[in-house]
Image 1: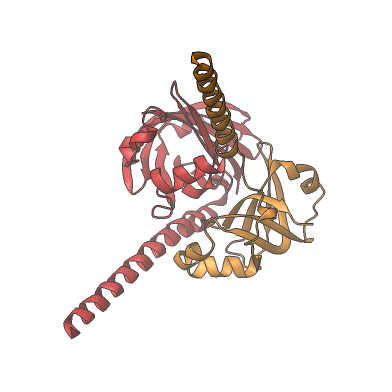
Image 2: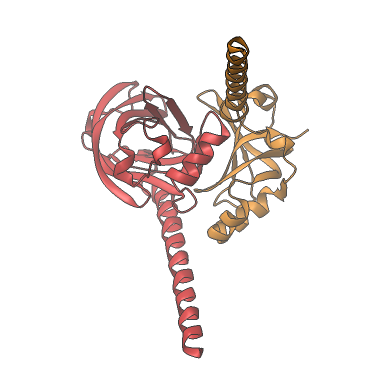
Length: 205
Length: 141
């Protein structure tokens, strides 16, 4: 009896310390992202707290689209390192019912509240941040959703205008790759592959 | 008799279709609930909301995630991004603030907001990145 109580207590302690560790890791990651961006040679950092991630799913039965503006991102204009983190609860659907299904059944947003990308624009030297214009670049990196990490490569366009730089890219995301479980009742209504638009309206820091 | 049965069946089909349309409009095409009309609003200052989230993210999520929050504070910044306003309320802490993504129906009212003015916004809590994030916010009169 006493042993099992101790075991329970130890188990609870472990769960709590793991939670705190995860929470700390998240906080440290985001804080470092911004502190490093502010400390290390100011002129090369571009930041946004209102990035946009949209997805669109098309099937013959239903079109579903949602938009998320709860996205923070940093782009280093010298090294090309680019990262973003978003809140899964930030996806805005046309109605409450769709949003509820997405958060509770598919994305399990309470269990996995954040998702993000860490990568590098491999040919960042092509972009002249001092000269207004549109530049096409290539990137590679890792996307993490629901604690599942996958490699992503693609092309993006960066539009430089004064102290602003808008980076946009389109990618395809398979919900099944990131452990999204589609219930039998929704099969046919949700596409196997989603079109995802990412738009980051950066400002020079 | 056959005519009566046919009419009866037709009536049932018409009622079923009408019911389906009502259900579709009531549940599937309904937009979003107006946060101002919520009866379970949590009243809190931007300072307290940020401070709690900044220290105890998991507990704060348990208490506030998805809830309707009526948050009061002083306007730190108003920004228009891709047609939608975001209003930043000061937390009196340099490490973060409360960012409220506004309902586009309130665009006209938000335009005239001045930095430093004390306001009350009501919206849904999405959690914290660097700042606490609220969406579908409306300006409380």
